[in-house]
View 1 (cartoon, rainbow, N blue to C red):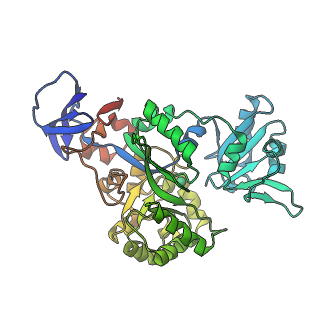
View 2: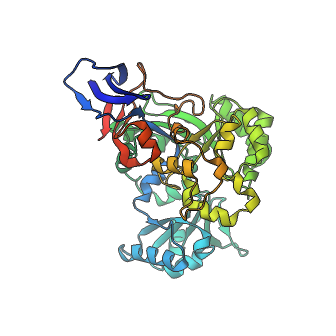
View 3: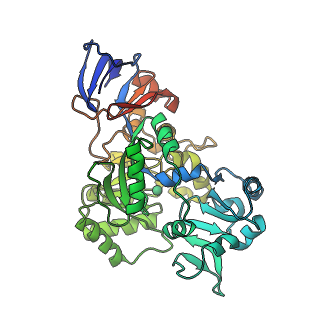
Length: 461
Ligand SMILES: [Zn+2]
C-alpha cells in the first residue's frame, strides 16, 4: 500500500512530500509524483511517532471501569466517589477503586472498607500500584488456602485486608476477563503514540499473548515491547518484542542482595537487559550497588528515578544506565512531594536536565495509569516543572521543548541511544502535527496531533 503525504515540514524543512510504501518511507522531496492515495499535510510537521517507554496497558484499560480517586482531597470525597459507584452496582459485585493515597483518609484496611461497603466486594489500589486494600467480602471471595506472602496479617493472624504486590494472585482469584484494549489503543494513537513499552512485572505468557492478539487485530495498533519478571519469548510474527527483565524494589522490603544479583544473572542468561523500579534513594542505592557488583550492560535501565542524589548521578553515568522518567508526576504529585520530602532533597526529585548534562540518557514515559497517558502533558511539564498548584519543582531540571519532545522519539529497542528520524528507509511510524514543529513545541498539546501512522497505516486522524 502506497501513500503520499504532501506538504509537510520534515526536520525543519517546509513544503516536502513523503512517500510511503509497504510500511516504510521510500522518498522525501519537493513535488514528488502524485499518486491516488494522498494525505494533505497542510504544512504541519511530520515527526516520528512518539514512544511511551514505560506504561501498563492492562491496568490502563481496567481504569476505564474503576472509580478514580486521584485528586480527592478529603476522606468525605473518597467516600462519596466510592458510594456513588456502589449505588449503581448490584450487591455482591466487585467494585475497583484506584489512585488512593493515605493523605486522603489515612491507612485503610478491611474494617474501614466494611463500613463503607458492607454489601459489595470492594478493592482499592494505592496510587503507587504496590498495595491493594480489600473489604471482608472481597477477602472472603478470594478463598483461603494458598494465601500469598503479601497478605498482611494483624497480631492475631487475621488478614488486615491489605495486600502488597500480589497482583498476579489477585487477578487469578478474581478471574475477571481482561479489559478491552481498543479504547486505549485509540487514545494513545490520538496522542501520536506509535510504540509502547509495557513495564509490567506481572506480564506472563498468557497476558503477553492477549496483548499480541490485540495488536494483531488492530485494537492496539502501537508497536509493543514487553517487559516481564520471568522468561518470555517473542512470537514469530513480531506482534511484540521482548524488553528488559523488570525488577521491582520496595524500600521497606528490599530483597536479599545475592538473590537480586542472581536475578540479574538470570536475565543475562536470557539475553535480556534489566530494568529496576527505583522511586526512593534507598531503592536506587540498592540497584546501583547491584549493577556495580554484577556489571551493567547496554539497555539496563532505572525506571522512575524518583529520587536521585547528586552522588548517584556519577554512578548512573559510569554504569551507562538510562533513566526512564515520568515528568507528569511533577505536575500530578509535585505538591505532595514538596510537602512530604525534605526541602534539601527537592532538587533530587524526578531529575532531568542535570542527568542529561552529566551524560546520563533520559527517556520519557507515562507510567499510566499511575500518571496521565498523555505525553504532551509530560512534555509541557518537563519544560516548565510546574505542579498542579503552579509551584515550580526543581527549576534547574527544566529542559528545552526540543529535548522534552526528544525523550519520546528514541527507538524503543535502544532508548537513550538511538533517536528515530523521518528519513528514507525508516519505518513509517509517524505523527503529523497541525502546525510546524516550532509552533507545536512552544505550546505542546495533544490537540496538535492531526494524524498518526503505524507502518504506513493511518491509525488516527
Ligand atoms: Zn510502572
